[in-house]
Amino acid sequence: MQTIIRVNHLSKTFGDFTAVNDLSFSVQEGNVYGFLGQNGAGKSTTIRMLLTLIRPTAGEIELFGYNLYSHRKEILRNIGAVIERPDLYKYLSGFENLSLFAKMSGVHLKRSQLMDQLELVGIANRSADKVKTYSQGMKQRLGLAIALVHNPQLIVLDEPTNGLDPQGIADMRNLILMLSRKMKKTVFVSSHLLSEVEQVANRMLIIDKGKKLVEGTVADLFAPDETIVHIKTVDTQSCRLVLAESSYGERIQEVHANELTVKIRREEVPELTAFLVGKNVPVLGIAARHSLEDYFLKITSSNQHVEAFTN
Amino acid sequence: MWKLLQIEVFKIFKRPRTYIAFIAIWAIVTLIQVAIYADGAKYMDFVLRDVRESFDIIGRPLNGYFVCFVILQTLLIHVPLLVALVSADMIAGEANMGTLRLLITKPISRTKLLLSKFLASSVYVLLLLVWIAVTGLFLSMAIFGTDGLINAKSYEIIIINGNDVFWRYLLAFCFAALALITVAALGFFFSIFAENSLGPIVATMSVVIVFTILTTLDIPLFQSMKHFFFTSHMIAWKGFFEMKTDAEGIAIPGTIRNLPAILKSAGVLLLHIVLLVGGAITIFNRKDVLS
Image (cartoon, rainbow over all chains, first blue to last red):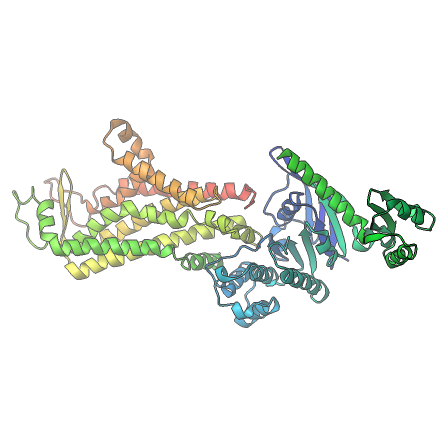
């Protein structure tokens, strides 16, 4: 399997501010690679370096086995990208935008072929309308059509669900899955929402303050015995005693005033619920969350506190 | 490169603001033509008030060539401001819309991208001049007819035969193209630094206005400096309407009095274009595109 993206010790500084700090990772062919981090973690800066919008301060980027800067043209011919919100020419129609960017990507398609692309993303019926009349979701779809029009091997999507309504988010998710499964594209997708990425990615990388925190397959990172169950109860003491006398005793993580946390396998959650009810523990609620999600929320919220304090 | 140029020209002429300049020129030209048509005789009396005392004017001094000369003298001061509207928007406008990011992720070198954009703004300038020629020269020739051109200056009066004028206009329009492309290059240069087209448009207009004022002020300090201002070279097109004279002071038809000075001004303007566009490409190639 070919390595599509290889990033080695990549750094980018803007004056005194380090946006990306010694970042290394690689993306294999056919993967949907989730690139996670809170806002300002360095995701967009990394993506901009991958797309030659920004020059790295240090480090190397290889795409399709070639150095990005010495083979820029050949590499970009094989990449389709939607960077944050898809900004397009508002005074042109959707069709004109697609046709124009297709030519700039070096492909010369017939009208019917361009319409097929618009059909694929579901906006063919609005192709003649000016983009200024499009909703955010339609612009996002047109942006995706532009990213796909030259049939690239790698699709880079920077926060593709930003500003979309729930239906738009679901549609985008399905489109990413289709790109990967049916069209066999490699997809590099960034987001600040773990729940969003886990549904489409098979590998993911979490960064914070420009540094790599964790990387791995989604299956590894979401290991089945890593589920944290939050039990809300009016009687924490009796709940703790009941659990301590059972096989769950060793898996109690934290005990608070009205809540206990237990780390178990995901499939054990119904069994634990039945056990507590059977022991007449006054349970107010049970919520199961993966430890990675807790970890991600922890780093996200801790940094937000720091930002709030600084501001 | 040809494809890129086509795309950029297509984008320019799809924007409504592009047509502001064409409408403004048509309006100014029409107003001048109507005014001269209605009250041209009085205007000619005013222009020739000193000459009529010493000479008999034969023929029709108020003709299409004369009207076009008046139009060019008026327009070529203001058209640079209209050129700035488009040229200063070429990069900054894309940055403002967010489309610059998308353009740079396409398999095209930044140098080619910038060159195509600059050439497209030059095409716009050329079409603007063609429009001035159509409305200001050809339409005036059709309305007022043709005859000799009287070029009245404060210290001399030049009378050019009717059959010796048209080629001078062609050269004057070519020179005006060079002058306006220089303004386009200036706007283009400012455009790479901004993420909003207003700043570079105002900056370009300000430079043109300030330099023009300094060029026309009869203050010795500014007079010595004016050769360094590109605006003083932009008006060299008027030189095409001056003729050499023989030993007896008689004008020689088919000649240009000071061609080397015109060529020098053309060279200065060309140098400005090369430096401004070259500078823009060099800086833009190293620039991080964040917007």
